[in-house]
Length: 236
Image (cartoon, rainbow, N blue to C red; front, side, top):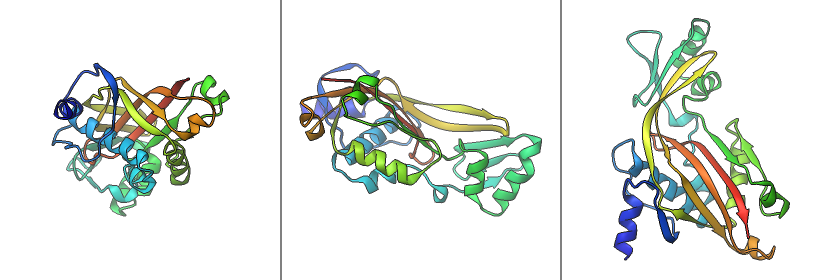
């Protein structure tokens, strides 16, 4: 039975409903592609780190300036990451500033110009019923604020997280359009992620289970998260 469960976790399934909550597993093989296997491995790793209260490990799954290196391509007005997973085409007015940041290896300045080219966001948005029950607070971390990220991760680490459907995902090339230009990113994301949480914080409130859905995306080049959004919706 354990072998069958592991096969389901690692498969490129379609999010079929599981008969029982599925425990997250660290160390699943992410494969070599931009596909469901990568998504399943990384989402499992995140949930497993939170269950182990390993905030440092969970935080390291989100990129920083040191995670990236960029170079100007032969066309001279297009910038690519060294792994070719991110491609930036600036508008004319942003070209000089972008090329200056690249030539000076100032990735932080690049991310300020084009957050989609290696940045991340974290959103924990409970339904009103969950907030009113005193279970969770809302966290919208959209400025790559590591301190607030750690606070949100620590909040989740008080619970025990499991999946209520078999995790699945897919990869694609996504164009992020902004007034300063377009960023094409090879990214992979979940399809229909459903999860639940149990643990002492709920017991203390006379509750048992918190249920929710989520949308998680990651950079295929590095396997680091670009977007994590969890929506706790029901508590009973």
